[in-house]
Structures are given as structure tokens and as C-alpha cells.
Image (tube, rainbow, N blue to C red):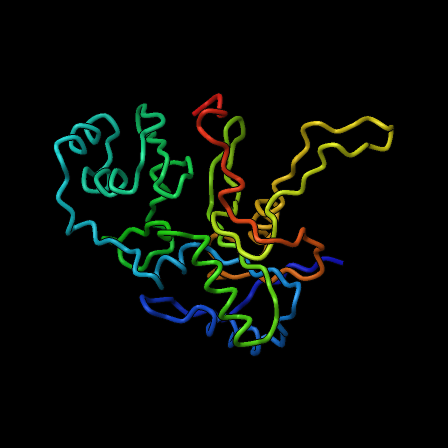
Length: 248
């Protein structure tokens, strides 16, 4: 049986805070034992806060290009400047929509930068500089603290081509292979599968959001009982290269 447990009692996170310590304390208060094989899903926002990836928009001086984009997008040129500073390339720009490839290699709206779940109105949160390293560091700290071998996934909310609404995806992974590859295996009718390669790290991140919710101050979930593919993959395994992406 698979259990998805929202971890209550995580306080507001500030720069320098020990997220693993906060998770451990919250789990103990909730009567949850962190065990080997558990998957711990952490929203990127608290990771960004602890790593100091918060920017005060009032301290940003926009470039001429940012001012130009702001006229058509109707967005604050200072916000545009922050987005461009976190961008490798602009994928699509039309109306209020700005789709970029981030320095982490993710293709998303506004380089993944937003104001949600950030305490001050003048602040915005950037993505962690290297979410895979962040996940690895947390995983190692958890092992040192509890002795348990766990998986850590750092999640974020992304839109999707062809579909309305957003889902949570894995932007940082440590302790598992993020894809479950069925290619070469036969289905129940004997047909050989040639395409199926399931992004289970994304599915796990989405499952965690069911108990986290966007507005309930539950930035961590613990998943127990899922038989994930063991190995040392990372979130980059999930990113399709631009040369193979028909739409970006």
C-alpha cells in the first residue's frame, strides 16, 4: 500500500534555516518515522528561501530590453529583468506570456519565478540554483540524522502543453531513477512496447501535491510504500533536449 502523508508544522522558512531539521522535528511531532525507502517531496519554495534565492524587486534596475518587453507584456520591467537574469533563452514571447529556458535547463513560464507563498509583496522567489544538488544535500543530511536511505524530490508547479491547469513536477531528484522505462517489454497481448518511458518522479511530485495543496502551508510530503527504481538519476534525465523538442 502506498501512503502519501502531508507533513504538518513546518514553520516559515528563512535564509539559512535547516530544512532537514525542520522536517525531522515535524515528523516526530506527527508520530512519523522516516524510514529507508521513503520518498520525501519538498516544494522548491522553502528550498529557495533557505538558500537565499529571494530577490527584492525594489532593488532591481531594469534594462532597456526589459522595459521594452514590459510594454507589450504589461508586467513590471523589474520583474522582467529578474526573469531574464535567470534565463538561458527566450522560447516564446506573446502578449503577457513569456516562456523561457532557465539556467537549470527547464522550459517554463517566467523562468519559474513567482510571488506565491513569499511573505513580502516586494519579494520574488527564484528556483534553487541547482535543485539536484539541493536534493542530494538534503538526502545526505537525512541519512546522517536518521540513518535512513531515502529519496528526495524537489517539486514545482508547472503548466503543460495541450492541457489546462498545472501539476507539480520534479525539478530536483536524488536517490532514484526518475523514469520507469518499459521499452522493449511486452504488454499483456504480446506487443513490444517502443515508446513508454514513464516520468515517475513527476508523478510522485503530483501525488504529493494532493496532500500539500497550494495554500495550506504544507510544503513537505512523505511517501511510503512505493517501489521506485533505485539508482542515482537526477532531474536532468527528465529534460528533453531542444534538438528533440518539436515545440521549443
